[in-house]
Length: 269
Image (cartoon, rainbow, N blue to C red; front, side):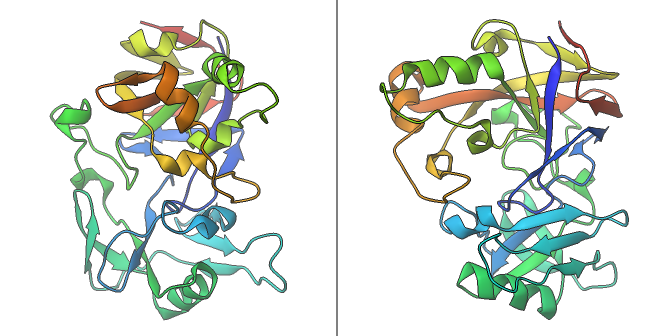
């Protein structure tokens, strides 16, 4: 097997981007989900409620900042550079296991609010070493993560996506892997073989598989049209349902720092 795709999501719930390679840190890919969007009360705002967020881009910058960009269909969408707000006073946020974050400032807030359709704030996680991985999601003592939902990284396989597309109703459009927002995609092996992996090594980085990833209705948003539909949850609930949830992909915790690149060999065990 080989690594076929590396995906980075600089701002939680905004569109991601493909990379040829990435640095792996203890809490995930360098620059992955260190930024998030919250409402005026500090509550997490995601594409689950605001589909339009998946159409907004965020490009990582060398200093840890991001370059925000509007949807391709948006007229006169000027990009906005946002630097890490190192000197800002922390604000309370309601992101699970993240009690405070640093606000980016009114310019970024106004830029996002006008596009999302509600008053929001952009915040930055200054220290990912303080946010633990939940034990019920396979976290062990010392495991840390960025502002991702469940674990430092998510891995999916092309074989499993092919099986899922084979299960969908005849004539239905094939589902794109982007719906599942993975960090790492690998080819080969049997569909859903990843469910039974204990450890996986990609490039020079070894990962522990913390468990499976239960999927929510956010996967029903088409990443291109931003329209909601019943897939893939409808089909996953028929073939991949257990414990009252539907499952696709596995959660990873890095065991060492290093780099991964498209084309890297993948070893199991």
